[in-house]
Each structure stands twice: as C-alpha cells, then as structure tokens.
Image (cartoon, rainbow, N blue to C red; front, side, top):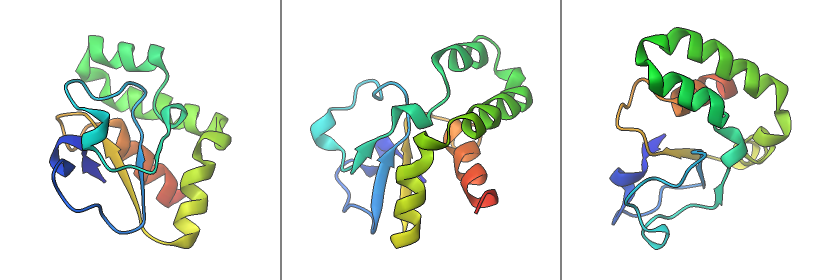
Length: 114
C-alpha cells in the first residue's frame, strides 16, 4: 500500500499497481502517477464514503459496511486477485490518514480471503 502523493517522482514499485479510490486524488496529475489500473469499483460506494466523511467516528461501522460491499462485489476485486497470483501488488490511495482509510480495509479483506 502507498499513498499516491508519496509515489510521485519515485521509481514504480515492483509488480502491479492499482489505484483503489473512487475519485481521482485531488491536486494530483494523472501523468505524475505510475499505475496499471484505476479500480474505482474496488473503492467504497459514494454513499458509504460520504457517510464516513460526515462523521469519522463511524470508522468501525464503516469497516463492516465496506467489507460487506467488497463481499457483494467479487468482480471488482478480480484484477487484484489475478495480479496477486503473479507477484507483488501495490494499492494506491489518496487519503491523508495512513491507518484509517479504505485501502487498509481492502488489503486486510484480500489477505483474509485468500
């Protein structure tokens, strides 16, 4: 996992790189980021993202709801699963908080479901 802004100007990581945000990270040019695919459908739904943004104290419930969305949409995760079978994968995200963001939940979900 890596924060998009932290990868600008850096060598691309080994393996496949997926941006897993529903919206493109604000203030970042698409040409400045190395990524193999932008997996918008692997990100939380717009409704769920807005719900959490309205009250960050809802984090624990957000995790449960997002994991349910992931379980209900296995096709969105197929590119990540296929890439994991071939080698390392990096999930890019735009959030400032490196511990409480959907990419952490997605990573854990992928690791637990293998």
